[in-house]
Image (spheres, rainbow, N blue to C red):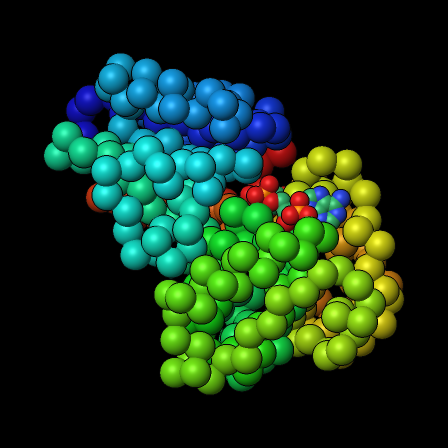
Length: 282
Ligand code: NAP
């Protein structure tokens, strides 16, 4: 690959993003030349930004919050992963067309199964939040046939819409998965116990505060996983430990693995993630 590849990550907030460093690490493994931008883009400016980027020779872009659902509208072709998720976290140019895909689910499952050695089959799983990231990971989780998957969101209408959308696309009976959607009330949250609790809300990104989860939520929890990544334990991870969760993780591994899958889409090269997983970038 002699030509310099033009890549970027967009969203808001974006300054904290480690994607440029991750992709530079991947590129270095192959002596590939890349320039990786980091731009603040909102749903209002998304169309103009994408048009300019690809007109000026852009190859691929990582899409982060709050743009994942809106980005679906700007690709000529959508992968099954993005269609099932109704969200895309990567758009790239190939054969004079724009393709939209979703590598978040792949990233999470690879981190859970390969790195953290956690299996999902027959497990009870709770996801907090119903935004673009939740939409990305839910189809991949269901593919692993958990016994039960519950999604709880602050705005109930939003999670009910997600449920309706999903039921039109995925055969939950065939997967033997019970799927429930509800709000963040104690009634809904404490109705079950969970092997795995996943925080996909953006609260850690925004304020770093806690959602105010009931302590009993983590009774019997084997793994509490925050999609957000940070040098310090997030409020969610601290709450989970205090509530008795056996193990906690932030979303660094997922970020690296979804990045590797996106890098493969852009370059046809499969990077080694092991070094980055061991040693997060400061
Ligand atoms: P999003 O589409 O903006 O969705 C945000 C979600 O958070 C919504 O469900 C929202 O609920 C909920 N929320 C926001 N503030 C809240 C609060 N104060 N209390 C309770 N719920 C709240 O964002 P996203 O794209 O899904 O991203 C979510 C998080 O995942 C971010 O922290 C992002 O950095 C992280 N992420 C990590 C990776 C990774 O690779 N590690 C990949 C993707 C995303 P409402 O519907 O009620 O507004």
